[in-house]
Image 1 (cartoon, rainbow, N blue to C red):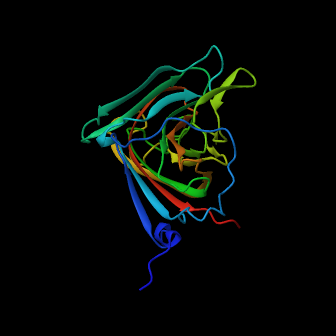
Image 2 (image 1 turned 90 degrees about the horizontal axis):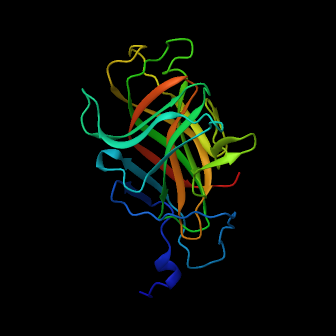
Length: 258
């Protein structure tokens, strides 16, 4: 039998499904980029991009993740901001990524964590969807500006390092089109409201729940095969909110032009 060519040896079958796991010890790089890449379609040494699933488990740690807040105006930043790896509240067990913030008068604060993923084909476009697991004690269907009905769980993906920047009007935001509160953007999607049916409107029992979106985000891997993801919540609730992120499943498929 004739030996395989170099191209055949380096080509991954298109039907292959890769599974990646992201925990506290998963090594990621820490730089983004500032240009729009062009897919390297004529490089014979690039493998074909394949579908993959990245599993994030915050029970195993939060190393490599960075937390921040955005969407507030100058002179009115949120208070009680906290990010920590903590034990989940009873009756839950295990650990989660604790996020908290209090927006007093702004009625708007984005609280988020972000990290870079790698292992993809460089300069290649992908479609990304999210399932987010988290623990909350906020009920839904409570009416008015309740915590469960006016805080939106969100996720985003970007070629660039996701960070808080100053925008016109002395206001902060993230450096991508996330949308705002219950409205999705091109690079960020609303997964649903934070509250869980059946829980008390004034807080109480903590439960774990999952929310998701099937609407994909198109993102390009950089020259090293990396891109950034964001998980968090966007609050229209005037007051303190805390949530424990437990993990996420990130579905990544090669983008097919329409």
